[in-house]
Length: 221
Image (cartoon, rainbow, N blue to C red; front, side, top):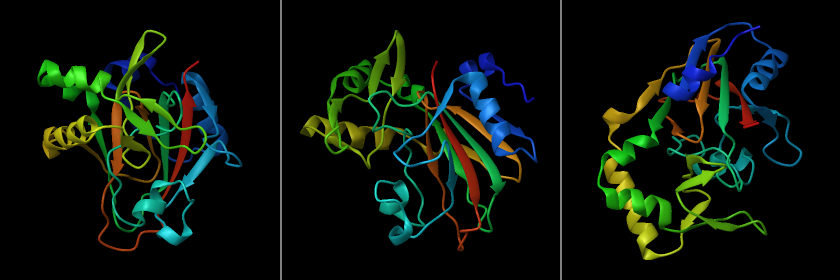
């Protein structure tokens, strides 16, 4: 059994290990150490299989449907949930021909700027588009006395001009030097705090649909 340090995960915000040979049962067992693995949509499995896809081949509500084989913007997974899942586990079965990285951004860095920004993050409203389950929310939220970030431009739309301006401000504040680049190798395991870290998919300079990551979305107990 692979032991995961909850303290390290809470302190650093992510853990990356190289453990070749894990199977799906192992990934579920690891996930159960830190929370409750869940399905993220009807008809899905608990473990998602992620490979670059053309838009026409992607699930209609996925990032791949909007961005295809291109890079993915920094985002919170399951931002369309009323409460996004706490952790995301990713496991590399095949890093892919294109050596495509994943980028992480610690959203706490946004608090290094003026107090007005912190106020805006907690008060400016956005509409999460999720069919009949659409709702209003802010980027910085709280749940059971714990704070979390939620940002996904594919499903969150500004409810006012203030929201549009806030997104522009965030874009200007996120510097490439603040991004953590995750280069994938066979057997790499990444667990990240989805309430704290935004993540996005990098570019590939060639067709890399051989890239395969397994993903488990983990709800807090």
